[in-house]
Image 1 (cartoon, rainbow, N blue to C red):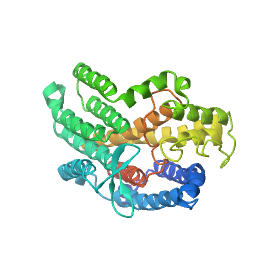
Image 2: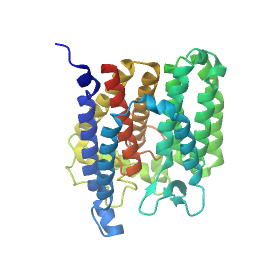
Image 3: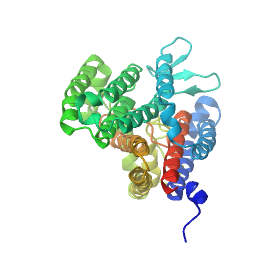
Length: 369
């Protein structure tokens, strides 16, 4: 019997919903496990990072559910507002007092009680703008000039992010841009031509900043500088290797005792590998695979081009960040800081990613209606 329209309209993708809830809850547990020692040592509170993650999870859940009831086409109407706001926030990090600098990078805005990372918002603002443009100009993108608005917008965002500096998010935005252009109908040969200046820019940036060149050399042979540039990767490999097949057990990691820097954020997958082992990592990867496949399915069944491209962009960001994070901690690509979606410590990232899943849910609902 056919389901009434009102029920179809508000039907959740429960597989996606349960998968996200699992990742978020697991993330809170792993943030606590990876950080309780350093949190007590530096802040006098074992739960310092875990509490912030719980607050982010609660706000993110409210946003995810609330946004799932907002017609995603509304985002098309406010794309310029979101894009301009994200650009202003990216620029605000360079203002005295407003911007917060840690470990030589200025990536955060001081909100008094907490901080916010604008690059996390800018990624999805770019996705919304690109999805709208590609949907409205799908015949133009077959011509190279037709792709320029998306390329120029992506280049401006990448420039502001690389100035922070934040190479990892810059790469994430660039890859997402290519994925959306390909799905939007751009010709491969045009994108291949675009790769030439990007490769030249990457080489220039690596040479211009000595620390990037040192990181690259440390990636090639981390053991040659195991106490300097290669330290983080070596410690990450120790954690991953120590986990074996089944791990050393929850809360039993040794690398989190100040051996592995950023254990609760960029390198939390190393702690997961140490405590849950290879089997645990495979199971976690399968959950991410479910999320990515559900996102692809939602994009494929969207009722219009904007919904298709929007779901594609959101799914691409999740997939790219997951793959890059795992590749970094396992030494497959040069070290660069990038949070593991839904799991790494960071309230801004968690809230924004969960909100994006709310958009996916609404696209799913509209297609079912």
